[in-house]
Image (cartoon, rainbow, N blue to C red; front, side):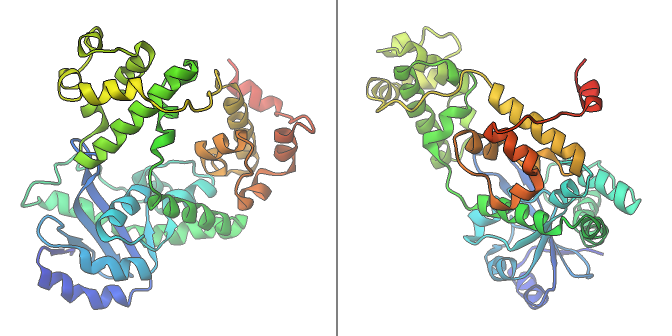
Length: 364
């Protein structure tokens, strides 16, 4: 039976077992609907083979968990957002040493893959999905919610054992660990507001002055959303900011020429936005006008995926492809996995052969 902890005394009583853990399974239930930062509603832990601990962060501070979660080995499934939430709340990066979702991607199971599907394939067990979109903020939590939450950490130790057999067979355990380390490091990385504009659809079509405006507007929107802890679209959508950057209005009345302009932008925020449009700063370098190069590199990683079984998104995540196309080397541990053919193809030294059966399956 899981142990529900909603008092400081109960949490302090659990610390000795956490501090002595060989491996802590961790999962979170959180809500993202109204805030910039996800709100933690429940923290699930399992120390070794003991009963799960279900900790209620709405009733008790989880600050005492900073030491065990940052010093004892932790296992998660798809844990990047878990790591980000806990880093913000505890001020330390969880010591995540194993991510079953990442391991599955190196074990030929695909990526990303849901925990329920992974448990079915590797453990032959069924996990109910009924509480996936449950309201985790309500109290008391129902028995169904508590059971669902406990199951998420109950299976992780056994799942790790099954995945390790596949990784040992392929020799890819070290690569999976490197990918997990990359994921954990990103959890504590400060957002780069100066590059946020590059993720706006249509940004690649802008002229220099328009790019400068969009960069300034998106950076302002993202900073304000964090400071106010509201969703970015609650302030302004990408489409609205792109329109402002293109039109560059000089008055609140001109701002309202876009019928989809939120009223609060042309009233409370008008002076700030008009100043940014008038004085946006230097223009950033233009983006590529098409996705051709990116798509070619992604297609090449799909070929490597077919050869190795390693998910292309782990071989080269999107951010790594953009970095590669900008002339930067990819992480050293990825190089042998991608292979010499891939490296030669990227350098333009030799053709990269795509198997005919792959083409037949992917080209209509």
